[in-house]
Length: 220
Ligand code: HEM
Image 1 (cartoon, protein in one colour):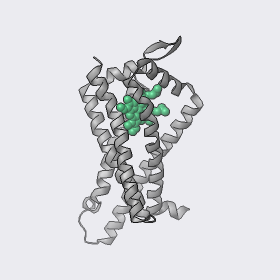
Image 2: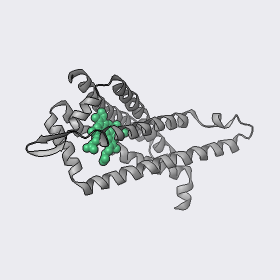
Image 3: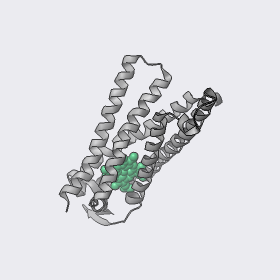
Image 4: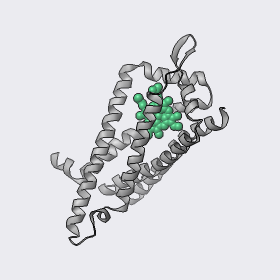
């Protein structure tokens, strides 16, 4: 087990699994958020119901946070491992920078932007201004008001476009890379999984992007 965790295949496997947790969360987060296109009351009632069950909320947060930390840690270890391996392979090789493959360098840059996105996202929404409203006699947070307020800013909407665009590449390349490093799947199946990863990422991102676009265009 220790050897597996130290091997680059083992580390990629863990990156794939922890990435999958987030990929699953993204759909569960995007789909009900589409309510913002239809009704402020329903949207607020939904966010209220999610935060009302504290045990479930903390469990989900713990899983997401630990997956993210492990994913980033493995990425750092793997990048260092690849650098050392390449350095040894090409004794007279170019400088350390060039020794890192373009693919992994892009993945690291995308990953850093996505991490910045998540942190800013939490500061903006989860820990953002607390407005209150009443839906069917229940006092709750007016999350709809905050989201509408935030997406009035063209800069914020543009930032969402950039980061969600990066997410398509990150998720699809990540999925392809995990399956490739295992080499256990037939070529045909690998192709199918790559296609599925692209379609899945595009569905998620289109769903998410429709929200700021709708708010920006139709809520003045
Ligand atoms: C248009 C796109 C998005 C909108 C409108 C949106 C909206 C929100 C809102 C309103 C909350 C606060 C919920 C609450 O505390 O009641 C939230 C939480 C969160 N969002 Fe998003 N989100 C979007 C995209 C994303 C993306 C792409 C990610 C991940 C890469 C993400 C990750 C999270 C996380 C981790 C939380 C905290 C969940 C928790 O505390 O359990 N969101 N989002």
